[in-house]
Every structure is written in structure tokens, then in C-alpha cells.
Image (cartoon, rainbow, N blue to C red):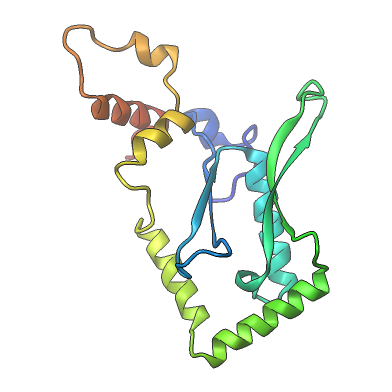
Length: 186
């Protein structure tokens, strides 16, 4: 679902949702060619910037973004809304030593090399999309508590509503907190 902006989203206003972006990237030098690093963020500027950059690179490379040598870069900006305090966000850029034409040429050559080797990149990406839609790449059980703590920290209303009669398992507290944040689906 496209997000008009945090201020203009009726659902966010009514349900108190929080933007959550996830970008899977492949890192050079790893032994697992199908493995990826997952960058997670709730920052609107990072999500907006990464989405725009991915579209630009997809258009410029003729659909070969997967083969472009890119880097994640932390940037800062300040606005009147941030009271001139720096706001940090993540951007996706070409590597410093590459020009756009060089990177696109390299991406086309790499895509052709994969194609000649019989790697069906298009089918691989379609399967990955299906698995993402089915939740196959969702966070594992051991990551959920860390994600809840980072992206949905406990608030004063969470602690004031807890019953002191008997202690609750930490997993139940976290699940309740997440359910309260996300709202109930009907």
C-alpha cells in the first residue's frame, strides 16, 4: 500500500501505525550468493529515499538493478521541522569509483554472464517476491523480541496497563504490545 506520508495517512492517524521498511541487499565477498543482509528502518526519509533510488536504478539499468555495484550510505539533513538538528537517513548510491554509465555497462555484462550460465534471474526474483508475500522471509522467532524492542518500544501506557497480580511471560507482553500497536484485523 502506498504511503501518502505519515501526516496524511488516515490509517496511521486512526490506528497509530508505524512505518516499517525492510531492504534485502547482497553484500560482496559473502560465500552465499543467495544470502542477503536485511536493513530495517522506521524512518520515513530512508524508506522514501530508498524506494525512489531503487526505481531510478531499475530504470537506468534496464531492469538489472540486481547486478549494479551499489552502496548504502548514511546521510544527514536538517530542516526547519527538525529545528536544524541533523536527521539521519539511508541512501543507496553508486560506489564512489563508478559512473552511472560504467555501472550500467557492468550490470549488463554481469546479467549476460548469469544468463549464459543458465541462471534464471527473472524466475529467481519472481519466486523471491512470492516468498516475501507469503511471509517466508519474515523475521525468525529469536529476532522478534529484538525488533519489538527497537521498533515498538514500551511506552508509559504499556506499563500502566499491566496487571500486578501475577507476572506474565515476556513473549505474551511483547505480543500484546505488538497487537496494541498494530490494531486488530477484522
